Image (cartoon, rainbow, N blue to C red):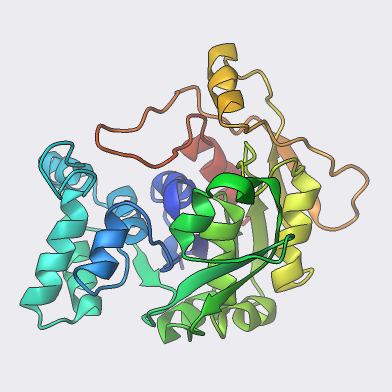
Amino acid sequence: MEKKVVVIGGGTGTYTVLLGLKKFPLNLSVVVSMMDSGGSNRVIRDEFGLLPTSDIRQCMVALSSENADQTLRKLFTYRYSLGTGITGMTFGNLFMAALTDIYGGNQEKAISKTCEILGVKGSIIPVTYDNSHLVARYSNGKQVLGEHAIDEPDGELVKHRIVEVELFPPAHANKKAILAIKSADIIVIGPGDLYTSILPNFLVKGIKAAVRRSRAKKVYVVNLMTRHGQTDGFTAGRHLDELQKYIGPVIDVVLVNNKNKYPREVLKRYEQEQAFPVVDDLENLQKPLVIRGDFVSERVYEKSKGDKLTRSLIRHDSDKLARKIVSLL
């Protein structure tokens, strides 16, 4: 019987993990954050009245069959760079919006049908179908509504740290997400933006409790770089502490990159964004087990034309991560 692996997250980090894991004979599920409000998701939410689909779309592409039409896969990641009002939108998001309309506003059915078209291996599970937004409270007492405003903070806000995040209005978990978590053999959390891709999942009512009750081995993949305005100065230990502040001391294994020889020109570009490599300070821990290794991709990633959001240049290597995760089974 195939082992059950559940990945919890959203964004590029989750895409990277899935890309490697799908190559193994696993019963694979991904629980995806539904709080995104930036870029093309702003249009999806504000103008179409739908829940955000960018993180779902990335998971679909990652888990799509290698036998699927390659042109179709490229279309789903294509981002328009020309055209009034359409610049920055992705074809995949527009496709799912159209399909939702065809199915009478049933976004769940549209997601299922899109997975069928792309030959997705595994289950893509939105963490909730409730329309909710992320709220962050900062050390200066100010509250900010919306994932995009937190991800790309303005002005003086970047000088203050996030002290708490919550959802407004409260959201309730998708029952399929609860079932997947309860039956998992391994739960993989991260990598990804801590406050805007990872933690929003555990703010949904029912998810934290399901993870804590699950007998699965819980694995946390630490980010490679800090994020200005969110995790400035965060070490690996600070990332772990902040995660467990929301879900409790349930992490069994932490995967930490120990290759720090990043290309100098890339580090300079990160420095311009005030982002720096995450320092490993997890010595002498009895729990969780800390596994160090070279988990970095040799490739430097550039964002596509029309993409106005901040993206990771340095990313984890999907195959290296997947091999280590599978070895824990």
